[in-house]
Amino acid sequence: MDFKSPTGFFISTNQGGILMDTNMKKRLSLSLYLNYFVHGIGLIILAQNMQTLGHLWQSPLATVSYVISGVGIGRLLAYLLLGSLADRYGRKSFVFLGMGSYLLFFVGILLAPNIQVAYLLAILAGVANSALDSGTYPTFAELGDRSSSANVLLKAFISLGEFVLPLCVALLENQNWWFGWSFILAALVLSFNFFLLLPLEFPPMNRPQKSVLSKKTANSFRKKLAFVALTLYGYTSMALMILYTQWITLYATQELQMNNVAAHFLLSLYSIGSITGVLLIFWLLRSGFSELTLLLGLNCGSLVALLLLCFIHVSWLAEIASLLFGLTAASGVMQIGLNIFLRLAPERKGLTTGIFFTLGSLASFSIPVITGWLSQQGVAAALEFNLIISLCGLLLALSIRLALGKPHSLTTVRSKISLLDRLIVRLLAQRFKAVDQVAAFKRTHELPVLDSSRENIVLENIARHCPDQQLEPYLQDIYSNIMANSRKYQEKKIN
Ligand SMILES: O=C(O)C(=O)C[C@]1(C(=O)O)C=C[C@@H](O)C=C1
Image (cartoon, rainbow, N blue to C red; front, top):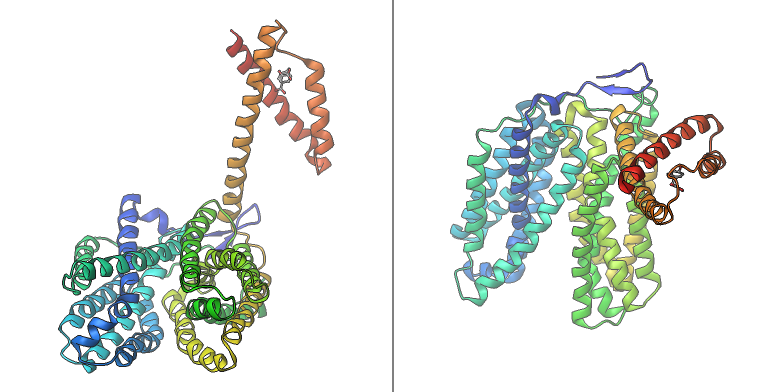
């Protein structure tokens, strides 16, 4: 529950971060991240081995591709159910359910006698994905105040898995080694992680976190608006990435007349942007940057990138746009949306995760169908559809921002102060460096350290630049202190 502190801020009674010891928290986070490295592998392992699996099951590529669609079915079937069950039966069992299902999938695919069994196993991979998400995202939210950046970092581990696996597959192919080793590797990491995770305690469930809502907005129309907007954001944020990765290469060759290598390179730039973006957002969130502002800014960024791509047909600009698109649309902006959503419904985090990702799964299903139909008019029509999605995403982010208003929790404001302090300290260090030079000058010319007339000028400057008259005496007092310390520092240097 939130209550109003004497200073007028709403303070959260969430003690999750305090009850668990830091070491335990670190070990738990690391294990959860490791699962998402494996999940990154799981996301593309069937696609990366399509030909070999086709031979194994004596089926054409189209049939193997059909098997891959089973993953989407599994997700769609499982998210809502597992999400709400995770609220009832605890996060840990669902993380284990996810790990167990993935383990069965990785080993099972190697032993699958036919395409039907493989299809069932693909559905199981979808279930594994849902179970992991239903257990993990709420856990990070319950671990404490840095849940936002922690959830965004999950995206980095997914990307790492997606980066490592193709290298692994290529190595196995080049060396003529058995293709199944990459599946075994994933299964081994999962088994190892199982033992790491087994003794670890999860934070207590569902204690309300610091609220993104002030008392005024709670239970009002604005809360409902935020709920609807965040649900729909689950769709648009996923749709943006799915559509882009599906069509960008063809768009580059057919509409931008780029050669094959350059067109594929656009997707690599997108991935580089994505990984850089995750790290950048992680750092911004850790520094106390507001999630709501970030959500809005990132959505603006993706729209700009798409506008550049769709309307200015110049290769180097397309490359910059692709990097920018990865940086803004695929850098954890979906996770930020989910984090805000989790704060809105702190008592049903599992279900909220389920709702959000069900919409994401719907996007993975519907976007290929819609854009396939649009592409009959040309590839440009398919990619331009992303402009509409991006605009909808931006409007949703704006609605979320308006509905939830400025965050008023004590933690958020303190994070902002910490960020400013960091900047001020850096600037002060620069000031002292400049004072060093003054000290050297004064020593050479044998001048006294104290220069009262200069100090008066400094104080007058402070008064002139101070944006709020009320603050003037306080700032001047701070500056008198700074200069007193500056004198002490110089005296020590000179002597
Ligand atoms: O400008 C100088 O002469 C300085 O030594 C620097 C400084 C300051 O920190 O701004 C410090 C001591 C003097 O009394 C006046 C100003």
